[in-house]
Amino acid sequence: MMSFLPLRHTRAGWAVAALAATAMLVTACGSGNPLDDQPAGDTAAPDAGEQSTIVVGSQAYYSNEIIAEIYAQALENAGLDVKRQFSIGQRDAYMPEIISGAITVFPEYTGNLLEFFDPDTQATSPDEVYAALQEALPEGLVALDYAEASDQDTYTVTKAFADEHGLTSIFDLANVDGEVTIGAAPEFEQRPYGPDAAQQVYGVDLAFSATGPTTLDALLAGTIQVADIYSADPAFETEDIVALDDPENMILSSNVVPIVSSSVADQVADIINAVSAKLTVAELVSLNVLSTVDQQEAPEIAQTWLSDQGLI
Image (cartoon, rainbow, N blue to C red; front, top):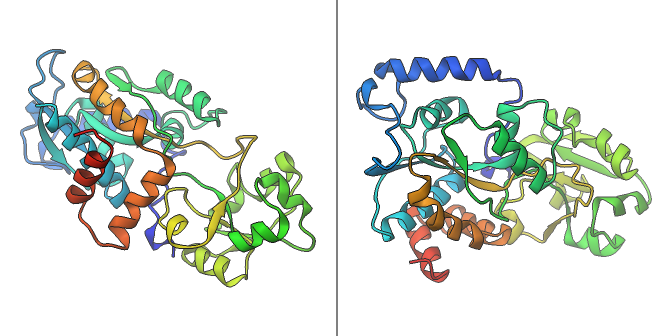
């Protein structure tokens, strides 16, 4: 099932110094630009007030592209000139372009982006992560309002298992008799929110199974009782599964957050913040279902959602 999941956004081992060097290289050498064929000299960020075109970027990930298209259409509806640079890849490919000002609006994820700039961060709750991210962002970048919508790890069980054992939060797993196994990608076992953390924070003893891309199938088949499934996965709408609450914020919060160039912040903030105010966890899951199950294209999904939300 995990074929619907993005590559993990975290780049905790990626040094900020290497990022700066990459940004200099990409800006200085037009032949290495993965985005377009504009000359290297055109990538410098313009002075505030001089931005005529808003460049909206996205990862090479359907959910991120849908959000980027929503931003783009909302900005166009407000009369702004918008250029799209979608499906760029992962952070090491697009972040230098954001820092240079070649891309001026980009949907990101608070916790994963914070870890990119500050691998040693101890923040985990939504507000703490957002505050730390604002401090960690390079000069010239602004984090607008974050949305309730997130794309982060969860401890997920089937609804039948939750009903049988009265589960609402990770705490409740401690009351389940017998062995309880959590399935996930192999690296999950060593993550700061893996089984060891669950024992320390919630007093829950969990066995671990490296299920990888078959995690959802294993959960539905009952070979594991708990699964690490990203919160925006379409399965939360298409299957009878529920994510357990994490009241101690053991899992790093990764809310959708617009990252924008300071040169365009005044132009776009009110428009995009209005989008973030409407983008809930359930809404993002439904948008992803339209893409993966109904096979709709991002422009159609975005236009319908913006219209339904009264934003265009």
